Length: 276
Ligand code: ZN
Image: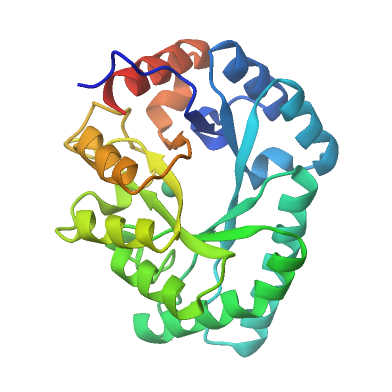
């Protein structure tokens, strides 16, 4: 393990990881623990002035890596697709107000139509929001999700599909987010990481672990080192592309949400130092 020379300079945590904490608690606690970045989930901003919340977070010394999440473009009904595009424009504005350069896209899928049609609608949706993204200087990161989520959450399930789409759209504002939880199983992963790195399309790197057994496919993600993903190997592939961004800890876990969040944060930092 290459942990000796590592510190927390590249450690980012997604606000959803410590869901029981309000953002006003999470930001100072992360900073005290040596965390340097935060990705803010939209639920953490509800009922708040977004700009002021961004200032509060930065005043703790945290960099806001991205806003999670936009997307959900596909729908069989044209009107719904239009509404999704408008919603994504609002999310881009929210990111700009928060002071983050990136929105992560969970692209969506409509089970009433084929994945191929959903992918086409995702691409159309992204293209429709591009002007807005450019105007607000916000990047969009296409995050492929594990195929178990292909029914409703995303028709983009491999890094190859995400790379193909980003390359077809070909905009400095569109790239991909690599999340080890969704992609670890893919035999083409190394090759596709190299590919998006060489096209300047590697925008973000998310980590957690795949528990064996996994008891709930949404809310039972593991801490790094707790499951079967070779995170140091994937981290190395990502690093070899020249990626200089943060490693973002993104864990949904009803078990961890039920425990003392200060103790949990200690565990996150330890797991990061050992396995990322
Ligand atoms: Zn992710």
